[in-house]
Amino acid sequence: MFTGIIEEIGTIHGLARGPRSVKLTISGGLIFSDLKLGDSVAVDGVCLTVAAIDGLTFTADVMPETLDRSALGALRPGSQVNLERAMAADGRFGGHMVSGHIDGIGRIADQRRDDNAVWLRIETDTRILRYVIEKGSIAIDGISLTVAKLDDSGFSVSIIPHTAQETALLQKKPGDQVNLENDLVAKYVERLLAPRETDAPTPKLTYEFLAEHGF
Image (cartoon, rainbow, N blue to C red; front, side, top):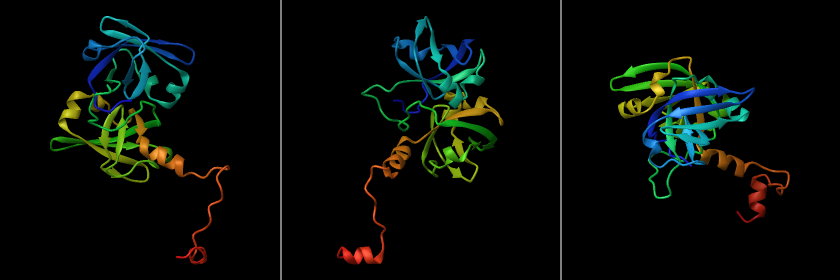
């Protein structure tokens, strides 16, 4: 589990492509203070497992399913990425609950400055937008952000100076892809409320039904 509060910006040090997979080698600094084999690290919001450590670099395998759902396939040696270690049990939730399991890809449609902030408009498909609400949370490249505006084809967020400085998000330009993870709560609520074949039929709420049951 992650919080969407980025710890540092890392760099893609090496990239080995298989037929449908990728092995990433990523360099950094801060996260290596206690990094161990098997640990989880969110790389641009994608939960990856540390397979090898060599000094201030670690290696992680990216399977085909992850490449299909995320923008990791667009990375190149030298690309900068947002890094966050899994949350410690005694840590603070400075952002929101982030699983590191990407729901899909968005595209930066517009970027504009507004005094000390920068507005980003992200376009994505309805499969993602169904869980997005104004003032709700969403993770963009692993960053916990608040949805400021919402429309039929996308949403907008406002990036404060601290986020701009501590993440690699504003290095991307209009047309670039970003990883999106919806709020976990919205997805669980929908799943719990969805009718199933094994569920007993739910009676329709009518005046007759209410009268029959004493209302």
